[in-house]
Amino acid sequence: MADSGEKDACLAKFRVKCENLTADEFAEAWHKYDRDGNGYIEGNELEFFFRDFIDIQESDECLQKAIATYMKIYDENNDNRIEMMELAEIMKPEQNFLLLFRSKEAPRTSKEFYDIWLQYDADRDGFIDKSELKNFLRDLSKVELSDEKLQTYTEAMIKLFDVDKDNKLSFKEMLKLVPVKENIFLQFEKKLKVSSEEFKRVFKHYDKDQNNVISGEELSAFLKDLVILHAGSGPVVESTLDKIATDIMTTVDKDKDNVISENELKMFLGVTSDDA
Image (cartoon, rainbow, N blue to C red):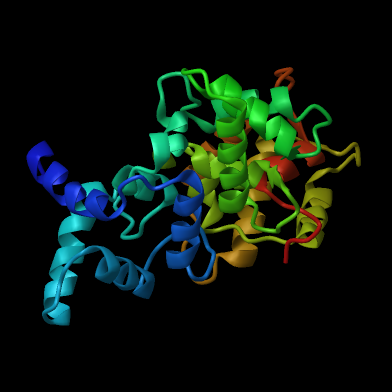
């Protein structure tokens, strides 16, 4: 792990080029480098990003060494790709608005985020619109922000996270703001790409009495079946699925009756009618 002096020296090179970067400009930069729109800068995108921000006129070998050095410093979860919050730490956009979500008062786990989400998603449809998002950001900020500034941040958030361009954010889209290591959904997302039709079919199999809920014991098996559908040749780790099932149940099961509804689980896993 690099010491603080080395980290500051490396990051300073980026910030010279990113001085006075606005929230909107940060959103544009993110989309420029996340070319495939999967929420990460990785593979060839990393080379494209670093060529723009590091003054290297030499060989590809020198570029790869530079990439390795920088990734060692700020790739927090060591997955060899840049996530949005990691880029925000490097580029430091205006008042670093994304880092509102890294303050002491910000949600630190998926459960905390879910609890806060429910305060704004009043109809429990799994979405918040622009006005609700604006209130969310206002409540989250420790410093008082002008209405104009809040509107700017709200528009930037929509630009960053609204994948399907419907001018509202889903629970799945907003979960990317939760710290990676504590984000239940993002830990599971790499294995789970499921359509609404598949979700309903598998859920129905476990919902024996057709009351649209499944119990905690059934949840692990339910998740395993979904993973098997989409995990390819990779192994399914039982202990990991059991832990995820427990975490989801703890988060979503508000009345502690050890059951979870179809709609609650669908929202938490980010499954929508448009998924494929």
